[in-house]
Image 1 (spheres, helix red, strand yellow):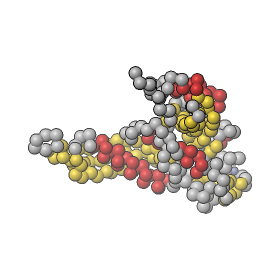
Image 2 (cartoon, protein in one colour):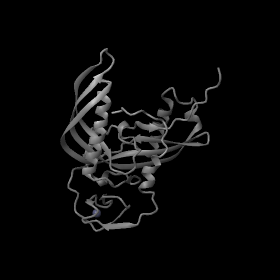
Image 3 (cartoon, helix red, strand yellow):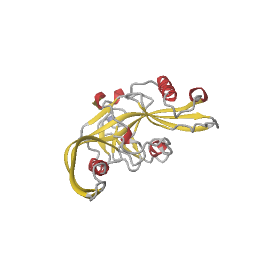
Image 4 (spheres, helix red, strand yellow):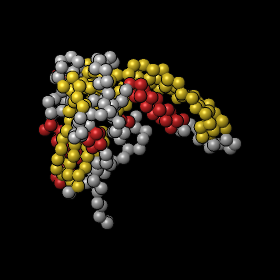
Length: 273
Ligand SMILES: [Zn+2]
């Protein structure tokens, strides 16, 4: 689903991180209802997973989280990530030719980010004006699609969810024992109902975009949703920082498939020919 313009610059990806685990203001703690271990959490977090026993609970009530909780596994070791980054640097004609040679990878952090995966069939009926004819005509149309719509369960808004296709093939029930020791797991800050609302809004704007390929002006549009399950899911994302000619750049990489979801590319300095 890449209907949004792809931009190359990630300014605030770090926000996802800073907002979470690297935040020095971790002030609160609950006890795991299952094993009694302390579970630190940040203000704003709603659902937390115990790192000792994997029990997932609602912070406010301490009760078990009742929805399906899934895990997509990371398939790469830290050393392998360098190769993935270098391959990405070599591909594509927008990149400087000396990128691999002149770059240095400074940071590689694996994080399991929380998402809501909302299964929904959305049907939009619209009426619009097709103006490319004289005289313009009014026509009706319909966009109907089934989605597994991904919503990041963090308040940070700039993670490129629309450019990220969760590799659902590798989805397993959440198992904390499968999480690498060096990885961080972020808790959810978004409730299921809110995630469903976000999904509906985003789908509606996608359908509006699609309808506008059919009519020039939308007069009226109505969207109906047939809701399926929403699954809570942790998926592995590598946050990588590299340096190129004394500047720092970011890359977000999918730890399940090894593909770069989004990466900063230094502006190639083309000489005058
Ligand atoms: Zn526990």
